[in-house]
Length: 380
Image 1 (cartoon, helix red, strand yellow):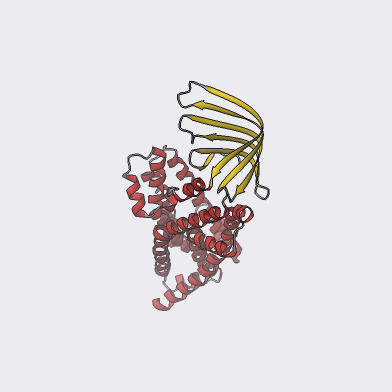
Image 2: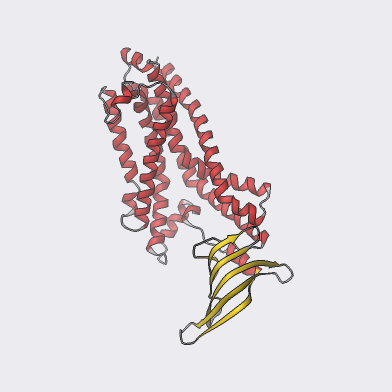
């Protein structure tokens, strides 16, 4: 009897899981493709093969993001269906309690935990690294400068850009501010209303043609300065500088494997912000899989308690719980990055919250007691 019941529940959980994970992946993949690749497609002429490589590279990150919601949703929907069809009531009348219904849920959640550990430790860093490599190759083949709007960034070593707006099709920048630190004795600051990026293959350089602006030059000792107004000015950047900058770009915490994260923590040259980011990433490799396990277990008593027909309620409830978890995760991550809270403590707070909710709901449902805020749903 227990074996039949185990297989019955486990099979239904797995079926709903595959459907929900595929739907979530497709939704998130569509938004990620738009966000990550619009610039590359328009500006650098992304090919179909490169597009497929980027999609494959993004898959581990997308799967990792989808797993918590999918794990919770499939278990909750399974037990919601059992509850709506009065199967839970019939099982309880036969002497089978909620605790005896949990083994297939625990096995399934444990499998999700193991799978998410593998994805988090190995697949996500590999996928992020692969994505950056493909992105750099696309930019390198296009011989272009990766411009970002309305932020200070350093696409090329020792050259800081700020661009108010940028037309990727015409390669025209507006409201430009550039700091060029390549000169050993001097630093140049260039201000322009407009500039156009031009590629010169014979000279192996990229030229930015500025219109109506000003150049200020100051020596590194801040003793002498000079200012020049211009109508047009050509700013040259060699292709070798662009390519070498892309190739020498250091890995961020998202691209690092667990061994690289541990090694980076031993580097005394890192600033506190960088160290916090590394610690957060390292601890989240384990805290998020634990959250996935707990969300799966929470789905069983929650679905058994809510006696309401129809899956839309289960989907909404699953997404609501996931949203609360995700907001708490992002909030704690931000607080830890600021240094207000130590990552070794803060990263585990969402898991502790889920553990408390899990124990509370399991005990309430197993003893047939009402759950706070869910009393009306359980009586429908």
